[in-house]
Image (tube, rainbow, N blue to C red; front, side, top):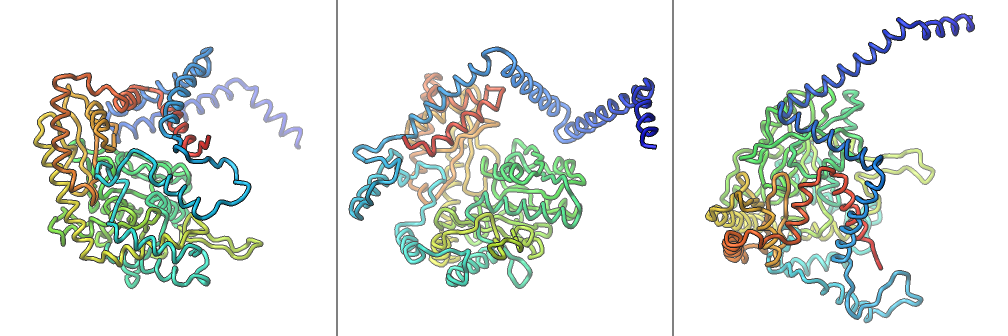
Length: 546
């Protein structure tokens, strides 16, 4: 029987009509698949947008093929990449004068006095003085008194590890109170079923939410090819999480005038594999607040999650009304359909770097965030987030910051920061050659130059005046994230922008420096893998010791 079966199969394979029919079926399958994918792109991005995406994809494929097949092409590209990386390393891998290097352990340990002297050398090294307020975001300074308090907290909890709550019960208590305090800020509480966890920062908070929604969707809905639908302006941590956790990410355009995600296009992108939507309060690039209630309606309609990324605005949004500034709608757990929120304590909460909170609308969702291994020979193992061991000192510093400021303290800091941002926004609007991007309501103010003036030329001249603002792309723009250090800078920044504009009007080539060269070149390079290679080179430089 086996021989007969094999012969029959062989005969079928050699039968030309049958083979041709099989080929036609396979061809038709791929035609339908490509047509469905094309229709989906047209539905999401419109005909022009879909064509643009396909042209970009084809261009990238041709370049990739050329680099592999044309003799010397890839070598030439890598040579140019190496030049760029070498230039980056030259600027970042700097030697401290009269300071010894330690590429290997010293033969004998140094004395405490020597080490303190070396620490001072490292602490005072560098040209950037962040205290003058010319740095966008990055340094969220809550004052010298708070810094001393945090240092004291560090000292008392240096050896503590939240992985062992039985050994360090005080750290467990502080962490639980941090989560509870932040939940209350977002109109959630343990009594109403809301919950959360501490993480190492906004990226981990976002990724933990992605993992939780992915595993929930698999367990409850049987989704094996998960997708999330997010604004193109959402933080890159969503892309990072998608790569880490095998989730397909669909980016939705934002309205060019408001900077908010286009709700109609979000609705079109939702399908049977969608596990979660996301919105920002505010978005990092332009400071726009997405329409959270509208996104929540979609999430409820399709029984999927909605993550509100409030990492940046976490300690501003809850205090806006008391500070005298009203937002157009709620963005917290008062909005039915919001399933998770990320809030960074280490930004406008002024806690030490490396602390954040991810919140959920139920413990049944949070459990999918956890990692549990009951069969490990080393014992039953469980951890709430990515990390195993964690520094309890960070949690102590965070707790100290929150109870130091209190509600009223954060209302005052919010009032100061928003007033500053509004003043900068108004000042930029008073310069005809510049325009504010969208309608920023919180701490971030983004702006660009009107043609024919070039935005990156403005950015270049700002850098020459020792500003360290964020340079953005797609479209070219610049933003400043205001902090408690920024108020002293408002008048100076607006005056400097006016002077820069006047200079560029007289001499359009004046801004053709390093910033303009880097971002102008990056924008014109069709092969984005080249930019990726340069970024990898930059990352290599972070651990280059010699």
